Length: 299
Image (cartoon, rainbow, N blue to C red; front, side, top):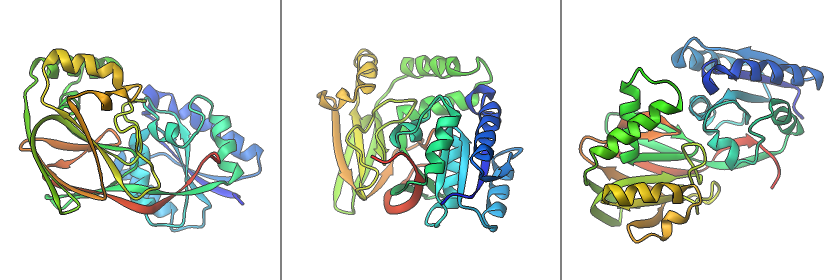
């Protein structure tokens, strides 16, 4: 039974709409007779400190109000713990929410799902960087063209919102080049190839519903890998619309695989996960079975 929750709100999620969603969520918890402890961090480091402190006290769930980035922050504290994650979607992508059948536009409905108390035990992805970093992720790890676009977005101060991503996307397409990758699957199968990108999915989508790894299952102990071969600009542009339906995996330039652990390297390329920077390659990316408890709608 859910009687007390800790609510972490990212005030910057959803272009600033998360605080309002957080207020509605807290009000709904209180209407249901559930005690609430609220957390709002000044930045990611401060938020993590507040979360770690809150989890030393008794709480039935850590509820995140925001998008996939702040959820990833919560995962670092919740992995392999008995405290479940609740999600009130208030970001721009909300890929965790889509995966776990959560209402994406109604904070009150999301709270009702959490209060119902249905817990599912699911896998997490894990990235161990050669730089010594260790990071949990919930959805998809991206390397290659996708991460180059994210690198550019992070260097830009204008424009704002989704348009910044679109500008970065066009800029990177204009500079498109083959990227040399070396991957080893489960210590056995080696792939050395020029690719446009390689994505490693614990779940099916990233980027706000792009089904980059459409066959991924968050409870099978495996990662689904989608590799897009070195393509021309025209072919890459034509591929983008198919990703939203997951039909890109049927195209000749796309190859898929599944593995528990992948070592991946591509000189000068960074890894991103749940939309955020993780580390430079090389890295080891793996699926960790049953690492997270999450409050979600029953299947």
